[in-house]
Image 1 (spheres, rainbow, N blue to C red):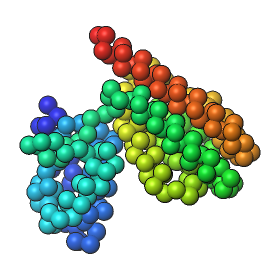
Image 2: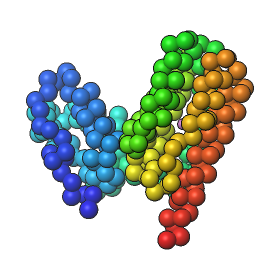
Image 3: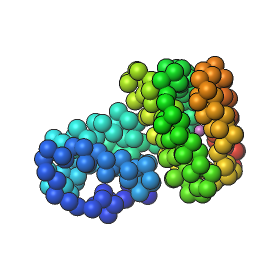
Image 4: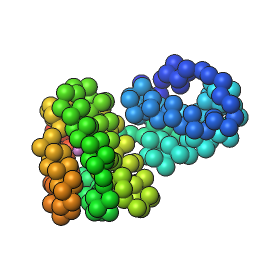
Length: 229
Ligand code: NI
């Protein structure tokens, strides 16, 4: 079913100047994948995009490569690029990796966080408090976490983390209601920002570990319940 979705039904045709093409195409596709307009399995063809945006295939190919690196697309034999599946069997491994990556980023970042960073993080928690749309909850959760890691000096580490959070954001977008997670663990979020603002690095790391382990547990339960159906 997913394969039947045509890019031209989802993405508006627009004439892009050559020097902006790669970045704009990447962004258009990225948001359509994250908000679910392009579901997993959708074929993403270079020529179709090149025609849609009135550009050569070169910037299209580069944009697709970026999205592949962000785990939003994957290349399948005989099919070319398709929208990547949501978190699946390896979800628990993903969370295990996230604990390693994110606690390291948090350790690097906390000593350098200033009042603006903390205020930004608290702003996202506040917005999460009133938010009921799943896509928006996933997005705010990602922004909150990234705000706390943002001062980490290792840029490659931050990119890896953002990729994992993109994956989680898509998963939450589709499964939040069925997982019975009415409200993400806001107590964790508050404790995390409190510890960060007071530069209590070890406390913050401990809260984050617990937060991610809880996430892993809930997703595991959800996947098990789906498998048992
Ligand atoms: Ni969170």
